[in-house]
Image (tube, rainbow, N blue to C red; front, side, top):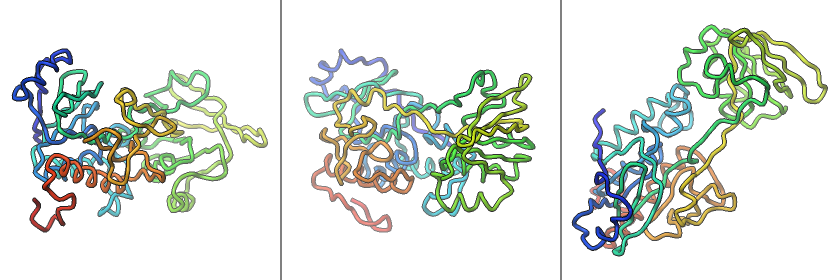
Length: 354
């Protein structure tokens, strides 16, 4: 799929900003710049196009899709509106097709480092490659940079990427394998369901008796021939070059059990870091992980909005569906910010948009 790429004004550096402020014609100014090319950002770009806004997307990852692409491209997504079920990479493809019809500029593999405002109110985004200018910004950066919580067992590093995994890029890697899944949240349970019929046998261990995954998914998993062991944890891993045996233990009785396995998939959460965003002058929540917004998705900075997982609300619902709605709200309010004569709610897509 062809993308409209943007060079971001070449080698323009922050120390040139004062000069550019005096000569606005030297800047290539966009109506809205969306930071993040995950589902929320891509839907926001589509909606900005519906409002005839000149739009740019910037993402630090080399491919669009955010976590869907980086963490689980072959995972089946069940809670995307309009799809009873859809493979993550296919959802990203459709979102991109929807977004690029308006020909937004797309800058991938580019990390935004700082945010500043010129004398005339134009926002200046400095990245590790370029400088960008925009009248409004929608931060749709998800949870920021993410790294998996590692399996806390001695000497497991030597198996990582070969027979011990934290992500699933291709389900075929587990074909015919005796697979051990570690975890009790949605990722662990979803992969148990997704890999059933691919792996030869699946054992799932979780350190608690209760699961944090959606109830319907747990019910479906329990109905399958998957060996579910709770409350168990991994004690040791062994094998000659590849994992062959795992010792697990009941964390209440201390009973130990040895299991022959070919691969381990660890899904025990991620460490998230919003990185440079915390230095941009945005009001953050108490944990410092989310950007505080109001019901219009406005932040404390004029013309800057947040949507999706990074938007801190009193009640958080980190769902793709929620992100879509927040992105639409943010973009429509941004449109009114750029053009006060325009309506925040222009009508439905079947009607003529202003």
